[in-house]
Length: 346
Image (cartoon, rainbow, N blue to C red; front, side):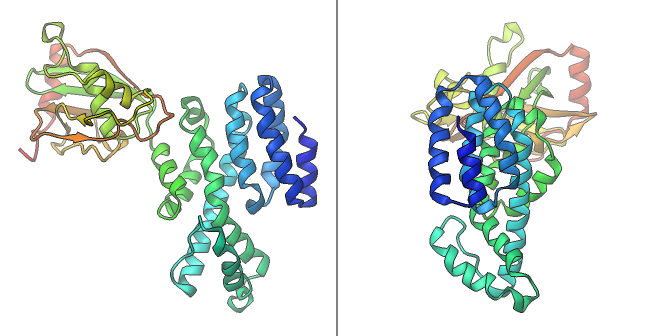
């Protein structure tokens, strides 16, 4: 892969050469050896770190996709995270300043609004005590920020990337401030809250049984509901929970199947309640489940009414695991059941 062409195009700010170099890299990557991809990504990191936001969004997306062809995504992830966080910080600043003066914000996905926004916001910047180059950088962040977030969103669906994600606090704060404006930021915010290798105590109130469960890569509680049902419902004589186990199509939709929306939808199997007796809403996330004695606790109760939903998982590329590690001894299950409150909603 000829990185020199790309570097030269960036240095000269030649858009045509830059676009041609991007196409060349995108076409060559699937044919390259993993070590060649790693070397190319290492070379790209210095370019990604310095390229203007407005010029580099497409390059960031290509770098994110290239990481799947290499051996170590950590080569490029720190730079992508840093630039994405910076883009969202500047985009939030743009929204604050622009909104205070001009009102409704321009659509960040509408390239046709870039010119009028530059004219309105940048050319009048000195009147607000701001240098025009600084104002222009904020406009770049607003209209290109989503492209910088996208590769982080893409790569963060991988558990190995989530495990080494740098600057998590900074990135989360920057994404939280802009997630109402950018679709990519909205979805990345959810990924930043995903739990990996998280222990969960699951109690079945009716049978007085308890289970040790470990979860990773679960995007919301709809998905958790289905995968818990798949892991725990079965033969009562074998210590499992009574009930109707999810179908193969429902389990596939919630785990690694291609069809995320099986015909007929996905049905609810039970009701989940936290240790304080509050319902664990499917619209929430496992990270929302409160802890008791240092562990997140979910109590299985009968369903109060029929439930169904359409999609099995919110992140198509994220591979979840919900593993039943074993039953709790009877005395330990009794201890937990004595500590949890009954459902507050009847």
